[in-house]
Length: 140
Image (cartoon, rainbow, N blue to C red; front, side):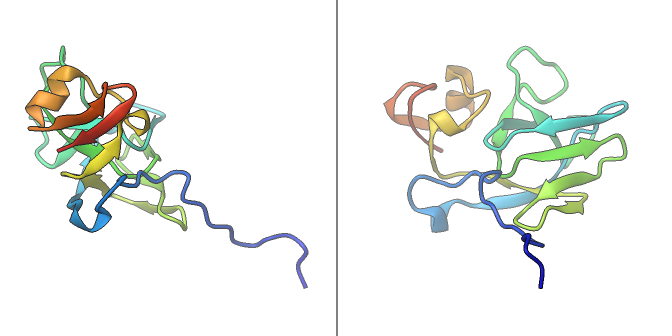
């Protein structure tokens, strides 16, 4: 009988809505692949759609001009993307897939989000229920 866990489960790599999780819609999206090597995307990252590759998303930044300057949602899981667009580290089992979940709405703690700024709040049609973009509650 093994003395070391063969499979472990952890939700630490998953973003969870603060309230009303059942009303937080998600879609499955591809992530922007690096030119070489791998890129780690953190859960809660504000994502924007890459204009040249519809259905593919990258980290939002207001100064970009590739489409990712327009925020579209929040990445649900911390994951790693390789140069072929394979996404690993997903879910409780750490699967490797071509798509990952992204929240298209919901209520979240801003402390759990990365890249949220006043411009993203406005463009997502969201509102700060309380606090600021760094410490508060965000609904979109």
